[in-house]
Each structure stands twice: as C-alpha cells, then as structure tokens.
Image 1 (cartoon, rainbow over the protein chains, first blue to last red):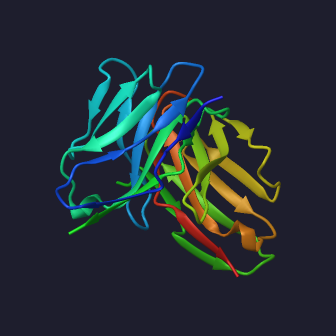
Image 2: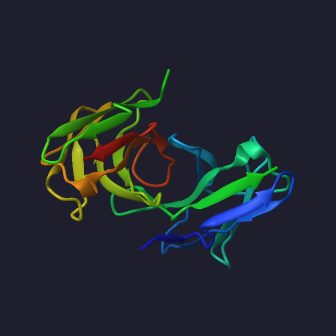
Length: 113
Length: 113
C-alpha cells in the first residue's frame, strides 16, 4: 500500500533563506508524486508533479522537487523564500484504493522577515 | 470560471441536524472525490465517484452519503450531525482514477455546535 511521510510538521525560516521540505513515500506500483500548497483558509493548489521523465521538476514560483527512487524521496526545495510562501505544504502519491491521492500530514512553512 | 466550486463555504449547525454540501466541476473530469481535513490538517479520503461508480470508504459512518446527479456534480449529505463531524470538507476532481493530479474546491468549514 502507498503511504507518504513528511518528516517535519513545522519549518520556520527567515525571508530569502533556502528551504527544504522533506517527503518520503512508500509504493509498490508506478510512482506518481505531487506537492500541493494550501494558503490559510483556502483549498489545495497543485505546486508541481512527477509522473515520468526528468527527475527534477519545477514550479512557476521557484520551487523544485527531485524524485529519488533509491531513497524513495521527493523533497521540495526553494533557494530563497518569500513571506508570501508561508503556507501548509502537502506531499501526495497517487494510487489509493479509490484511485485517490494519499497525502502526507503536511508541513507548515513559516517565513519570517 | 472556478474549476471546482463547493457551497457553502461556511456551515454552522446544531448537533442532530441534517445538512448538505454541494460540489460542481466544470473541467469535464470523470472522477470526483470528497476529502475530510481535520483540525490537525490531515487529509483523508471519504468517497470517490467515477462514471456513476461510487466507491465507499468503509471507515466513513453511514450518516454520510454522497449523491451524484451527473458527472459534474457530487454532493455530500450528512445526517444526524455530531460534534466530531466538525472539519473542513474538500471536494476534488481528476481526469480519471489514479495517476493524475486532483483539482480541489475551496473547502467547506463545517462547525457542529
């Protein structure tokens, strides 16, 4: 069965610092991985996804994630964060019993000035 | 146009009442879902509906019943509301089951008093 572990529940960083949000997955089938972002009182928005091909995927707002099969990881990184990046970040793997996404417990990124 | 819209955004009601949450998607997707997000932000699948096939999560109390009048709508009806039902409920849709990203609505914050 698929599962997702996000190792950090909270990550506080200062503005313009680099950040890494960690995600490890467990899957016995083909792996499709996603990062979603949830701003306060809003729904989830897709940040980036890995389906196949290049193991490094990028989003339009400077985030990137690298699929590492040997380490079963899909960590999210950004070289310089902004205050506006403050949000909850969820890693997910496709392939639940209902064809649904299985989410990690989320990492709250707090960017301080 | 909002891709996945759900109403109402906020719902406050008393224990024992029956309430419904509506969801509509205009993406032409075949699959729709209901997720529950608890106070710790954990997202858990409740139901998925794919081309008239409803897949029920057996851990969901039978007080919860999804209804889909057509492919673009998946409503959630809840009978005899309990305090523990307080949560944020998210509707989502995807092109098909498994392997693709899901698009989420803005959520319905249900508070049972």
